[in-house]
Length: 178
Image 1 (cartoon, rainbow, N blue to C red):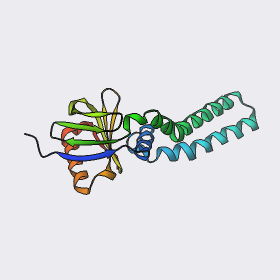
Image 2 (image 1 turned 60 degrees about the horizontal axis):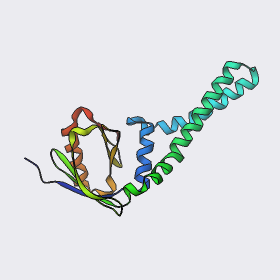
Image 3 (image 1 turned 30 degrees about the vertical axis):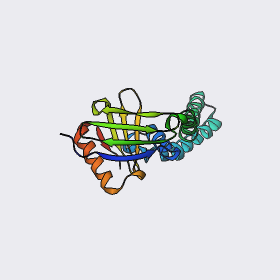
Image 4 (image 1 turned 90 degrees about the vertical axis):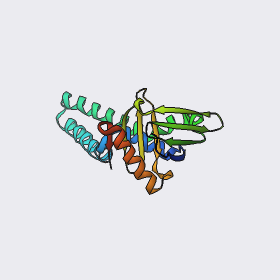
């Protein structure tokens, strides 16, 4: 028997997408400390390796420096520039509102955009992992897609109801990363 659906109207904006992309770099509770490590400790270690290399001329340290520098540049790109590029590339797909109705056994999604219109039903069995963070729910599908439910469109009651629903439906697949 289906419960009364939790109905939410969402527009995927860049800020929500950017938070998701950054979360995916440091999945789990590490998404809060990952950037600190990547953008404070990694540069310090990289500079230390460069300084050590200059003092000693050691080839191994030079190779380590180059690897660390490459990783740092890659993380800079993935954290700051890649989300904007990906969002712009897929802008037509999320330009518009979607109405999500969460039932006990499925989600009904209705798109009301200029380029995409229609309704689809998604069974919960298609989700392999569900993450809850301070600002959103991320429902990751088996095909690599993710349903982003930004909490800025939810009131406290809806947030609590969805959290309980996801904990109940996904138990071992649900991860609270507050």
